[in-house]
Image 1 (cartoon, rainbow, N blue to C red):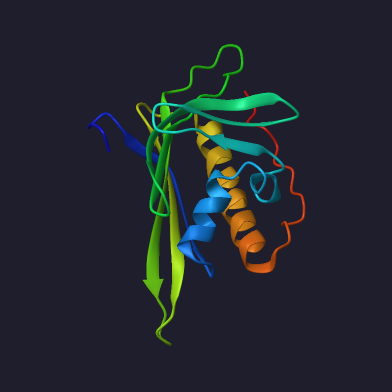
Image 2 (image 1 turned 45 degrees about the horizontal axis):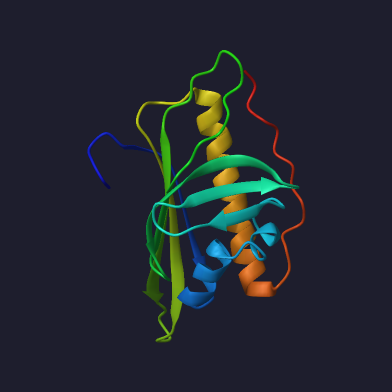
Length: 160
């Protein structure tokens, strides 16, 4: 982490039977992301460049690429528009790709997605984030292991 102001808000860990390079490509290729990121397109620039997620040209998440180490680590700032009357903390998301050995001597990828904030968010947004990261990482695993997208699941937005 860049400094001590960040606290962990959500963490999702998934083990994927795919090479690290394939997981990296899925995280950074805008053509692959709709298959696992709830139909959204993810665009990842270079370090200091733009990070954004959206559908049909509407970008629901915007940010900046903070760190980009191919097949190892991606960290981005994460900005969403808050509903009227709600203040959301600053947020960064880190994707960490590690190899895990299997008993048979093979390897799988351990993907850890950590959401950091600089202040506690409203409880309903924390719960929505946890459900969202669970759905996204499950979708990524399903897509990379089977070649098919997870059936569509619609999560209810946080109630304000």
